[in-house]
Length: 221
Length: 197
Image (cartoon, rainbow over all chains, first blue to last red; front, side):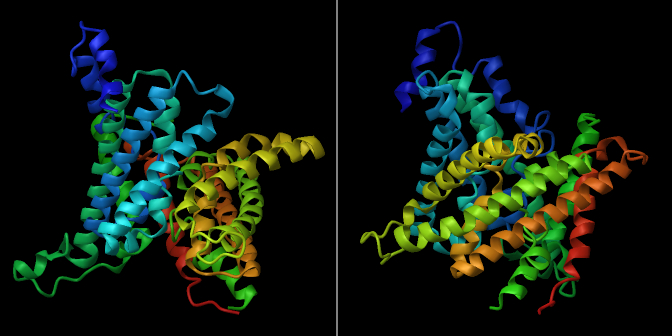
């Protein structure tokens, strides 16, 4: 795999492995072109798994893995895939990677995989993955696509981790299962049941989008 | 569980959008006008009602451990099988509608390809396996979930049409205010908890 990834770099000696243009693939999706808050992709799973930090962390890692490798594989195969059946090919690649992730989770992190339940399988229909394959990997070289995958994956990860942080802090008074408010001696901290519920996720994400778009100055018509 | 009660529950209480966040991408993207929302809602009901029972048959007779047609445990192929069935069914439904009713194809057509990657369709099949439904329950669940999705997206589209005339802060325009509205709608749907027939 790494051979395939490094090939274009070897051919084009003029461009560094992490040139300025390539760094933009990683840095753009973090803030200015964030997949969740700006492009409105992948919201389904972004909200469902964010009740606590730990499953969210595992979910982010799983999604980054799937995006990076599906981008790499599709980009390496891009000249061999007939245009008419590309959606099926993309789905097959994504689904195989998700089966891999699912089996690993079941073997090594059984508790977390029980919490995530069907949402691991739903990475297949996560619009970010499909979106990146369609918009980027089908027309770019493997190494660029890998960087693009990392960018979109991390852009997704930091948003859902922020949502999970507030939901766990306000909903259960803890962070990664550590009781923050009891530790600082405020044992009567009133936890908010709304945050544990699905509704809390909508409201927290709405507020994050508001703050982020106000900072970047992005206005939707 | 009694079927009517399951149907009511999957429409209102365990709503695909408000309880499980499934199908959010198209829920947010295609809810700007009521007419398109009705088109997408109808297409989702249609495809969910067809794919959930079909995937039930696949799961029961081929994939499950100790299934009657295949001796080997193929549960790990579940995701690939389900998504392939969904993509194939969507394609098939699209072709049949195009042949039989061009008028319906004109209004539903553009939404059908979108549906293959709609999380609520795959989610419906995965929930059906997780909750051990029978064939009848799976069919009712598929139809109920689809109806719940359609109800939610049409209601949101109606609100967003009115919202165009309101003075919303710049950063909150579009996605932000839609998320907050969805949250408030979710609170309203919570009031159905405990209803059983």
